[in-house]
Amino acid sequence: MTPLVQVRNLVKEFPSRGGWFRRAKSHRAVDDVSFTIATGETFGLVGESGSGKTTTGRCLLRLIEPTSGEIRFREMDVRALSAGDLRRARRHFQIVFQDPYSSLNPRMRVGAIVEEPLIIHRVGTRDERRARVKQLFELVGLDPTLAAKYPHEFSGGQRQRIGLARALALEPALVVCDEPVSALDVSVQAQVVNLLLDLQKRLSLTYLFIAHDLRLVRQICDRVAVMYRGRLVEVAPAETLFGAPRHPYTQALLSAIPRLQPGQRLERIPYDSATFVPAPLREVSPGHFTAI
Image (cartoon, rainbow, N blue to C red; front, side, top):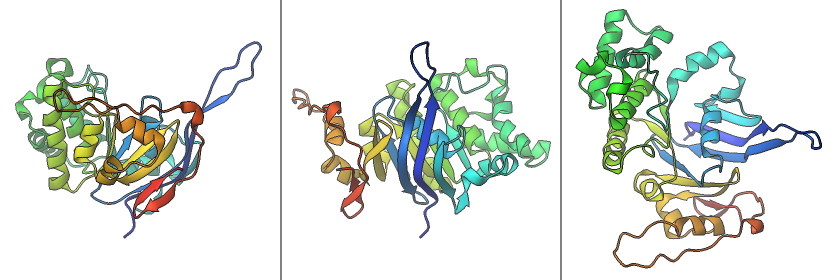
């Protein structure tokens, strides 16, 4: 079966400023990254801060332009789309941002925020759009009568639900979840995660789930890719990766997961970044790829 998303040899470089006595260089934030996402799958992308996770997700949607590489969505070449075609295609892939406080326009009422994608894509009449907004509020567990309020009148968890409603307005097939619960209180995180899982089943959604909470990733993701310094170092089914990691960086990363049993000692595995040598992924067991 053809994957919903195919990414091949993705590269993103950011220029850095030179100085009086140094030449300008470019920083390669994403370096030759390749992966696929199957329809209905939750594909996890993990790694430490600065590893290139968010940049990869935004390149996938062309929120930032890749330097090189290939991105295909349902066999459509995303990088080859014109501005107009990309705008029309974006109804099929959306994003939920990390920060629910800065991702909503503080000058717009939340009903207008959720309705905005429908207006941009000229979906339905005004009454049909308002009915759709009401339906979306109910879908994410919010009272539709709150649509006239402004973002600052809501809690962080409620704002993230509003952002999710906006992302779902156009009935996308793929949703990039960019650390969607990391800015929320622990007590609220489980509610939002359960909502994401419920919506995935009800709406047949596919997720690219970017996160640094490894316990959460193990709980909800089907497959997981580990990034380090802009490269993928390991890709495997979640249980395989957490049960038998092969790359030294993955082993070090997983050793940092807190233990739930009181008194259980945390055995940290150190990783010397000086030993990192970029290498292509190779299959070490069925569905398990690592860069060693």
